[in-house]
Structures are given as structure tokens and as C-alpha cells.
Image (cartoon, rainbow, N blue to C red; front, side, top):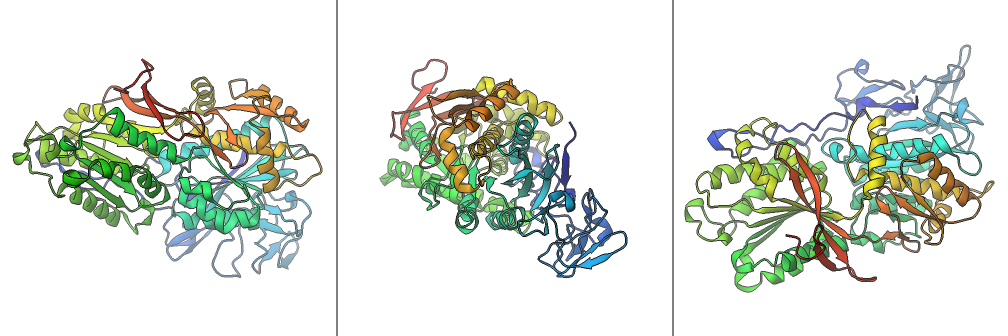
Length: 617
């Protein structure tokens, strides 16, 4: 099915594999390799002719392409001409511009009564002027097949450029699939279909705020799926969406502090509060593994953002207490800056290298020749972060191989545990050894890494529904596999649209109404809506039930969507992950379950998934 989709591809490569070409590793035989985290989210240029967009001719300003209508000078003329009814060219009414018809030229805002009277990358605002839907941050526009005039806009904000593309692009794809599924089978109560404007927040929270501002002021959205990272959610909510009365639902933001936002119940999430995961990590090490501080050495690296800092706030004190007194030097805790905060790759790689250097020269970490006891080197590594964990693990693996194992094979590789933001990278961390230039000498040691990778994440997975979803995802996105985390953005988007359905015909859809409608989606006594392979059936059943004033109980792709309607919070057990398959083709495996104690407890007990009994093993 053809979709009317506009992509400003010059601003980002949406399918390119992350290049890994920079951080020097210590490798056997003197080999060297590097890990690159490509931070570019714009296209460099030297002339305007290098800035051609699907929506028209852009301009080259200060060495980077700027999309049509987004130039810095107020007199810049937008060159977007595709899909207009009369061949006109329009500009953003916030700037002086022109509209050129076949025989006439006018200056200033272009009047309208319908979206179809504007360019395809514009809408008709409530004030009756054509306004641009795309911006530097917001580069994707998808109209429904039914046309452009009776639509409700839904925005998304996700960091889909490198270094987060492999982790987050599947979430944006899933969001898109949810909108397309909804539009194919149903409408809102006034017959509206859903139009989508997608924004890239790779450059950080400030970019997410800029995107949200555009979605509020120009696109006129009442709901946004995203941002992905907790810090961006907080900034967007406080600065833009809560003051603007816009409903926000994040697929993945998990920082506990989000529970305390003064948000008028407008900020929701599909991922549980990290208090559950934090307690699971504590109990994994202190109870399930029952590590002995006298014979252990732990390295904790955490991303210096809301996600990493707040997870550390949960797990740090209990672990530090366990290693108190004579063992206080046997736990090393250090922050690292988020990838997008660096001006270039060289700065990032140098900073990350310094973090590892500090860990390997910490008090009590011995040389290979002096190694005699387990605590003389790290026995456990915990990384509280996202996809940048691959840089740390691969680099450490190379350093361990050359500087420790090759000199003293008695020094084992530590057990490496990743928090949920990095779990989707576990397979790639192992499989990419040997494919990253310079890591070829590490291939014989890859089984050690395969055996020693662990992860924790909320139990946000319904096996049968995910299989049905993944099949449709592969059909839609060129046989790509959906990450399990992509189910979260599908469910977030679908739930948002279902909540819009609760707004009666003739009444205004707004953020408060969407938030109020969420209570109708998880009623245990309501109609069960299971996101299985009968997509058209369950979408229409949900829509008709909600439009009639009834309630539903959603069983999403990620599992039961049991929000607390008063807080927008969701509660879920925690999974423990390892790797099955082979070191050449590793497969994520949920081998343990952290079963939460009854409500309102935030702690629980680790159980082996096979035996149903502790410990994990």
C-alpha cells in the first residue's frame, strides 16, 4: 500500500548501519581497532545544489543543509512545491515570504480553509494560514491515504540517528506501523484519520524540546509518542507539553523522577519505573549471586543522565554498603557522558578511554603478573546505559585479551551485566567481534564474551502477540527483525489513538481528554482486546466499544497494558537475560524472572525460568 510519506533524507540516514571505526583497543598480536559512534545528525554541504529534499530545494548555511523554509533569514523562500493543488509555493507565515501562482505572486502568509489548499508539507492552521509541518528536527510527514483534510496529527520524538539508530529506529518503525494499522481499519469518532510528523532528537534533550515546540506551535498536535530518554521527557514535559496541555507517552523512559512530575496527568509511559529494575539488580548480586565482597571486585559505569543517575541512586548505596570497611576499594563507580554531548568522535572516544583507564588503575587492581586472587581484577561489570555500552564492552574485551588474559590465562573475563537500555545490543556486542576492523584476533576468545553477557529489563513481552507483530513488521520494513523493545512504541501509539476514540463526535480532542480516556483502556471487566494477528478485528472491536462509551482491557504486543489511570504508571516484573545460540550467532534468552511481591511492593524474588525456583543460575 503506497503511503504519502515525506523524508528529509539529507538530515539523516535512517537505515545506515552504525560505523564502528575509532576507539583504540588493546588486542593480541598488536592489532588495533576502534569503535565509532557517529554523532552527525545533519548533512554537510558546500553549495545549495547538495541540499535537495523530497519537499524541494534546501539551502547550504554555515556548511550544513537546511530544509526548505527553515533558513535563518526572514526573507528566505520555501521551495516546497510537491503535491499542491495549484502549483503554488508557500512560506511559513512567521516569516515574510511569497506565494507564487501561475499568474500571480503574493507576499506574506497564505490563507486557507483546508489542508489541501496548502503544500503537501503544510497544514491549514486554526488561524487560517498555511504553516510548515517539517523542521530541522521534524523531518518525516505521513498523510493517511484517505486525504489531508480530516486528520488528527500525532507527533513522535525519538533519537533515530547514530549512535542510537540501531536501537531506536525499530521503535519509530513500530510507531509508524501502528498508525498505518489504525488508518487502514478505522477512524476517530468524527471520521478523522491520523497524520504523523516524526522528529529526531539525537542531539539531546534541547533538540527534543525544539521538536516538541514545533509540534505544538506549527503542527498543532494534542499527543506525542516519545521522547525515548527520561531526561528529554522531563524537559519536554516541563517546558513545552504540560504548559501546552499536550498528552505525552514515552515508550521507554524509566527514570523514577518522572513519577513525581507536576504534569496534570499528561505524562504517561509504557516502561515501568526503574525502581523495579534497580531492586532486581541489587537482589541479583547480593541475594541471587550472593557475591562475597572479600573475593569480588565490581565496576559500575553509568551514563550521566536521568536514566543512569537515577538507576545508580537505587543500586549504588546497597552495593557500597556491602563493600564497606576493608572492601571499599573493591567497588569502582564512575559516570560517563552521553554520546550526543561530544563535539566529535575523537573527544568521545578519548573520554570513554579515560573512564576505562581509571578503572584499570584503581586501587587494588593488580598487574597480570601479580594476580593471585579473584579480587585482584574485576569479577563483575555493571553498565547502566544504552547502546554506547557496546563501545565499553568491546574495548574492555580487547584490553582484557591483550593486557591480562594473554599474559595470565588465569584471569577470567568478568560477568558483564547491562541495564535494560543496553540489552538490545547484547547480541551485536558479541557477533560484531571479528567484523569490526581490527577485532579479528579476538574471534577465538569470543565464546568467553558469549558466556559472560547478562542483562536486566522489564518483562514487557507477549510471545504470541510479538510473533504476530514481528511478521507484519518484517513485511512492512524489508524483512528487518523487530527488536522486542519496538513493541513498546507500537503499544504507545495504538493506545493513544484508542484513547482519542473515546472523545465523542463534535467534541474537541485535546491532551486532557486523551489522558482521561486512558482509564477506559485497562478495565479488567471491559472487552478483552488482544493485539494478535487478527489486526483488523481487534482494532475495529476496540474502536466500536470505546466509541459506544464502553471500556476495554488491552493486551498489547508488550503484554498487559495495566496503567494506573491516576498516574500513568505501569508495573511489571523484571527479566534476566543471557545469550544462547553460538558466539557467531548469539540469541537473546530470558532465562530468569524477578517476580515482584504483591502490590505495592517494588522488590521481589529471582526465579529460574525453567525450574520456577531460585536461583537464576
